[in-house]
Length: 222
Ligand code: AMP
Image 1 (cartoon, rainbow, N blue to C red):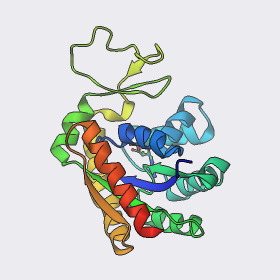
Image 2: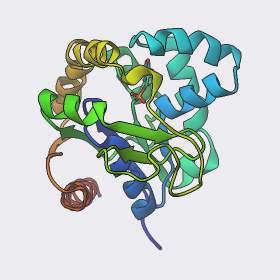
Image 3: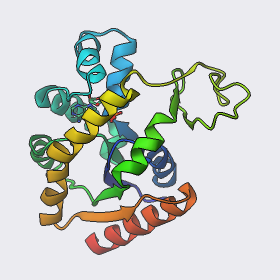
């Protein structure tokens, strides 16, 4: 049986978390829980949460801690996450969320927190080229040479630039990342759970670095 894993991935927007989390999720056979994806789904479905979240997201702000903690608490209680584990992507974003997560996962603590490290100037360039399929969520990097840049190769759906990928919103999110989320790096370093993985390079190389880091951390905790 393939062993599961309980992981948190931290990193600036555009560090490659989305792409690497999909691969990690297949590798360890655990759900990829992206709070950004959950919120975008709520926006599409025009739920009460979605209508509220859209304004905050479009402005590049953060949705309130209580709402986010409730969403994640509910998701982690489902059988797939309870049984095999999970990859949390985009959560926690604040120390208050991290403290709540410690309490939620007290019986089965996370194995490792990975800081996928990519410098700010590199992520800014990546984000301006970022595209996503509205229908199946596949990520693309625009090169300008695509024959059909706005049609998804996987499902034929609409490829788009995210509403919150404008330069103003991206800069605001990167500033927010430095002030609010970077303290999480200290929080988890103090718990001896943090591993920094270099996110620059070919996605296959980054993936190898990630699985090596996760496997080493899991070994240590057995
Ligand atoms: P992401 O796809 O992770 O970049 O998230 C997109 C947007 O959703 C963020 O810019 C926030 O507005 C919101 N969001 C996602 N996760 C969280 C979270 N854990 N706490 C607060 N806001 C969040």
